[in-house]
Length: 83
Image: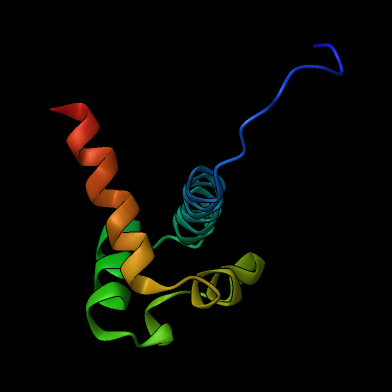
């Protein structure tokens, strides 16, 4: 692309991608420890209790850095895309 081309940057797209990547990392860490990632993530998203997320591979720290409502928003948008 040339220097005269304007590129659009969307913070919402960046945030969505960050949430997606983080969820994937947390999901993989939970599976690796033998947990059911769906159950653990639902428990955390409903209650806000980080005890549902293993500290393996910093999964708990990664998950608690995210706003739970943003995670739910991303999940719903991804679901809507599938319809």
